[in-house]
Length: 621
Image (cartoon, rainbow, N blue to C red; front, side, top):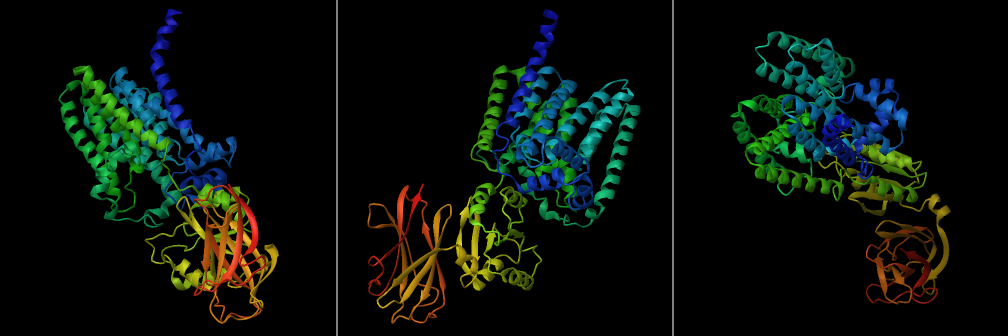
């Protein structure tokens, strides 16, 4: 029993760290809104047949082919229409990275250092962000960490076996085929090996031979599936993508993501760069830690340098493209903590408190108010009740999350992404909008236009001039608007609540029906009027929302009709749209009252029941 207890006790810390990492990655896995990139993964990686993904999707994005197979197999095993199962794959695979960082720490230092490094990796806010995000980055960094740990193991051995070399080639190959950015990590490890083991020529030659073979293999795969992206495909970039502020903010983003505490990313990143440079010089003075210090420095600087060089040709400079170099920041923090532990336990404890306080603050933001994307689901839930099968949606945001969520609500409406791109001219847009508008259906715009596109705002301008703007608003920052035909449609005539009420004595206008729609923050009332005669002075129509037991309106909408009453067409049905804000109204029973009045004198036209006609009652929650 005693012989078993000691190994278990030695394994207990890393087991607890793994359990903590699992809890942080699996808790609230569906809480964050579905991002557009995740919806793209769901549609084109998990749901599409592998042959289709490799033929049609791989040519559009610089993603290695293994990721399509991994998500496709996962979807077939766990289901293809679940956000939970979609995100479960990166969350689980990312746990391998925690074990890999622990193994790497033991390889280059000792167990206490390894435990601290693994704990940092388990708690790293930006890594948890990606572990709950259905893309390839969390999978890549986990296999990259495994490859690094295995690589350090074999080059440190005097007589590495073929099995050791094969293990490294497999892990590094998996990492390469999960993300092309692993090329930078291969070159980083090559720089480290050349610097630290230059005297061991045989090992060095073997290592560089394996690295070269892997690079040739991934280059062939890239040329086979995505060769056209090399000089085209929309990924051409320039120096504007590699700015000083982007380089300075990189460490803050790699560690905290968008949840950096207090300081701006640039200020915090500059502080981290400066602290790192000074402390690495201090740590280098200890001969016992020079090898891990050199490895940490290579991971910190070489991938960033290589990505900056690549950014001269392609738009690739972003923290997620060097996410695996976060291992360098973890090793640096662990090295600094370990050195402080040897010199002063008090300083080491204070340093630990500082790190975990900042990590905890960022994680509380992530699990609290922070959102990765706009909440399309809330808007879609409401739209599913407001839309009719004949309606058409113009979606300028091009967000796949909106498309997927709308399909989950089984709403059979047509969706078109307009503008199709920044180069689409206004005349081309006008032709497409005219074709869409050649119907009695309602045209909706859902989503925000790209403000840096030359054709921005044209769709709104065209629809406002050609159709009657109706229901509109915002949900979680997402604008939406409905544009109706100028004249009432057959669809409206079939669905409206019929009402017969004459206003004026003798009758000036008759109310033939209404439609009432409830938006998240307002009521939208469509009134259908039939002019009987023209008035001597221009009149206005009013709508009052009166709470039960009260006489004064809680909300009202007064406006002139689209066609002035002094000249409106007699006998032609007209539609007026009124918005009644309800966001701040107390719950209860309300009555809708409608009428006409002279704005110059305030005198109302006679109506059934007095000066205002009771239209309907409703309950507000």
